Amino acid sequence: MTTRTTWTSWPSWEALSGTSRTRPRKLITWSIRVGLLTAMLWGTFSGGQFGPWEIVLGLVGVLGCAFAAWAFFRTSLEHRLWPSLGLLALLMLVAFGAQQAGADVPAVILWCGCAIAALERLPLTAGLPATAVALGAYAVVNTDGWLSTAMSTAGLSLAGYVLRLDAEARGSAQRLLVQERAARKAEAETAALDERARIAREIHDVLAHSLSAQLVHLEAARLLIEREPAGEFRDRVLERVVAARAMAREGLAETRQALSALRGEVSPVEEFLEQLVATDPAQVSVEGEQRTLTAEASQTVRRVAQEALTNVRKHAPGARVLVRLEYLPDEVALEVSDSGGRRPGGELSGSGSGYGLLGMRERAELMGGTLEAGPGEEGFVVSLRVPT
Image 1: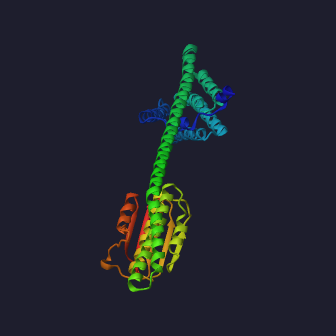
Image 2 (image 1 turned 45 degrees about the vertical axis):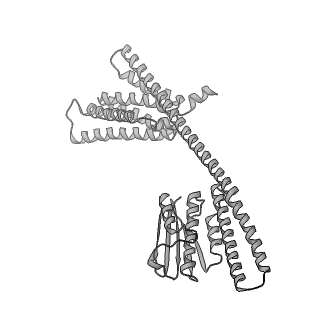
Image 3 (image 1 turned 90 degrees about the horizontal axis):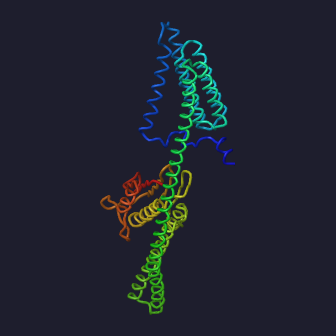
């Protein structure tokens, strides 16, 4: 099975494409190609006087051979056997015609080039016969003696096979390098996920448990206060306890969202926005092809939306709000606009948590995004763009 695969398989894509070549090797390869093209032009037009039409015909022939060689490299790269063999046959026929017309140098270059290229780029079952035909034609027209002809044909065959082995070795090294990089990236991502899971456990064990205990105690305090006789002092204390309980509940909900984000278990952004505006006169619109965002981008969108709606409640209570989420090819855009209200001083306002839109702007810039906030046509507009 291994022998059969060796004879019938194509060289790897990395070997045929030349992506594994170093810069000096690529420079040498292009220098050889330019040198061969120059030699073909010199061999075509040296040794005689040519008219305009003969010069044009010679140039067209040389350039046509260059194009056919380029097409052969493309078809062999795509593992298309019959088109590749057809182009090699065409080049050999052109070489025969050039030899018959007295242009021996271009003919020899074409035959030798076809022999080496066939052995280097085609499966051996097809490359060896093509190489044999090309070198046979070269041996027939070569007049340097049988020993010199045998040595040159053997050298050309060896050169083609060595180039094939060298390209395969470099291609294998390139594939191993890509696999190693992918493995290292996977290891780094796994380590990052493990660390985020550890941080999530620590937050859950400390902050989430603390907030849950606070909720229990605040609920107990509320029940005890409600049993007391009604009065101004009792009502004020009850109001503060209820507000503290609501803040603790919101903090616990946000903590759980942060824990889900750390574990990579976030709900879709669209659902979060719908829940966020459930109690407000707001409308949510989503444009573009929806997709899963990275944890950082998802959290940034959520936090900016929360902050923008908090500012609307503080500075433009009752205003209509439009939340527009747009999925772009390489980024996601969020726009929160309201229908009225003033912001003192026209500056970005922060929420009661102390993490205002100014902090969100810094967070967006760290991700390579932007956040802009200012007066719009009617009220205030907050626009966020972050890469995904």
